[in-house]
Image 1 (cartoon, protein in one colour):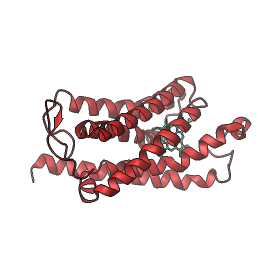
Image 2 (image 1 turned 30 degrees about the vertical axis):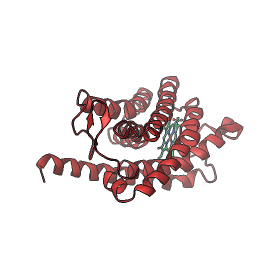
Image 3 (image 1 turned 45 degrees about the vertical axis):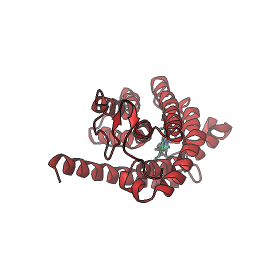
Length: 231
Ligand code: HEM
């Protein structure tokens, strides 16, 4: 196996483990949400508006957020799609519905109340809109059998969902560095999705016709020439 491929594989495994680990830690924190503990880090100061609608968005968000993250990881996994094309299709539909109807709208509502203030709120709102847009475009591309485009949009969507992981890694970093500034939280909110997305776009820029994503299809004049077996 070429060294680049080995490097890519190691990176993929490390990233997958990080996503899993952060997801488990996030879900373990739910002891503070069921029932709502207003002395916990996230819910402190939210008591005045929590039961005025925020709780609906919040509980939908925390219920499907981790599921969307894990499903996203599975769905962009090339060997999984090749081996289980029917599962890829079924889970893909669940993912599209869950992200469009639950994660993105609830994130948009919660953005309005972002703890780090208006700058963070705008960043989260934009993240919610982009998350919904990318999955809708990825879905449309799949239906139209434009599989190279489908793959690119779904990678973008997964990176946007993974902002939840990056944000918590940055939060951990801030704790280690004893950074307690409001600006850091707002900046982290933006950086958590802008940076991965920018890296992705730069890595893929001007490379049409080449192999870009792991196991990507080749595009010749915008036409997918490799198959998306059964999906
Ligand atoms: C990509 C779309 C997403 C958007 C727009 C979004 C938006 C938000 C917003 C605005 C908040 C409240 C932040 C604050 O008030 O400071 C929040 C909290 C939360 N989000 Fe998301 N989120 C998204 C994806 C996810 C995913 C994929 C997960 C899965 C782990 C997730 C899990 C959570 C949890 C558990 C909280 C409560 C705080 C905590 O326990 O850390 N979110 N989200």
